Length: 101
Image (tube, rainbow, N blue to C red; front, side, top):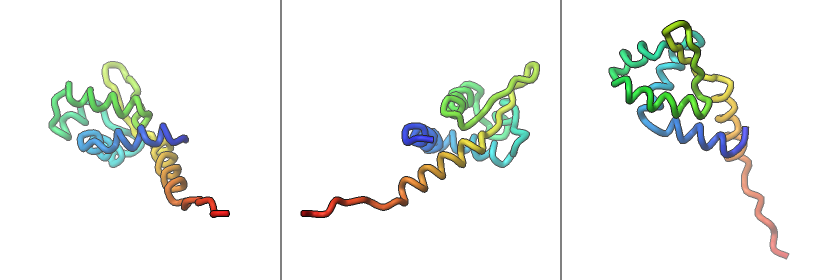
């Protein structure tokens, strides 16, 4: 994980709609949910959901798998854990300030 990818993940999760989608998927667990199930659960227009899912997928936070006509969405738990670990480790290091001669 690097700073740019961590920032991208946090930016995607910084949007209220995307955070609602992602939270729902996390609660669904490894089985994930179909796009239709997400839409119904969040009472969201299909076009709005597609737009926000694309951001989560592009950042790698959500994986999609096609099963026939259905598209299942699952959170990438490993990526989320890596992003938060990187953020925690980097932000909690302290600051190295050069001493005056």
